[in-house]
Length: 137
Length: 286
Image 1: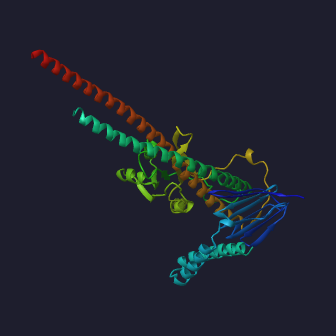
Image 2 (image 1 turned 135 degrees about the vertical axis):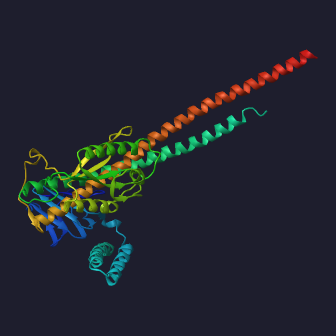
Image 3 (image 1 turned 90 degrees about the vertical axis):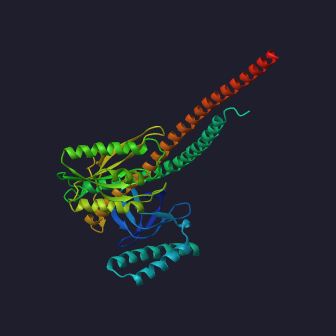
């Protein structure tokens, strides 16, 4: 069975390196499943969860706040803006951040504030969802 | 017997100072270890993004991004990294010296300079000089985060995009080893094209969204990672330099204590000798 070499790094450290059988990433245009021999692709990521299926082992879940995905013929590189192993996610803190982000949108006075607040909300929402999913498992 | 009271107080005061410098040395050593790990951790990202930038530039030679185009240099931006605290040997002084000599070079060539400062030491130093400081960020702590530096980076990249500056330099200490750190001036913008030989293999990528938009994001991330790396390396240098400086201070304090002890013992012996000779003299007189 063929596998893909995956390298997930953020500016503050390397999170995962190894071969996986299937990789799911939150690309800007929607969730993306990457199987071996995927065509070369370069895309931006949005906040969400990266899931890596390992042939004989547990899945790996990593939460990213956005970033860049590069698929080369023999290798996949995820350059995350900031990333966290899903087990390190704090569900309560994520919920609080989401609520605060919602409040900020209501109170936003200028367009710029609104754009910023909406971006925050998207991020907080994704973080909360990822944390919830992990909890339910 | 009240011999050498002053010397004894001096000895105890030097001993106290020695305790402090020794403690600072040990703190710096443990922080150095931590920052070294952080420095290592930032390497994979920096290397990977560099190769992505390389691929992108190779594939899109026709798209002229402002970051990639060489311009006639009339005004230069410099980001200067220093520490927030002193007592770290030549760490900051070396950076200042490198910066000032570069400033002079630019002055002679008639090129104006904008400075962005990192660290309180730089802010204090450049306040006294007649230079144009556009932004300053202090108190990054021992664990700088990318988010703390985004403002500094943005102010410079905006200026570059608007054509206010034509080149962006990064001045910071480079960590060679614990004993050696040297200031280095690196060119950040415009981004130099990587060597052709290194990129033999390249492919046609699918882009999501368009290549232009992506290139913009990737280049910004690339700059951020470079600046972040400089910040982390700078902290490592500060700690290494502080460790060495404090070790020297502790050793010097030890030498000083030895000398004072010798002096104290001499004074004590002299007093005893004097006392004995007084007694002997007194007995002989009876």
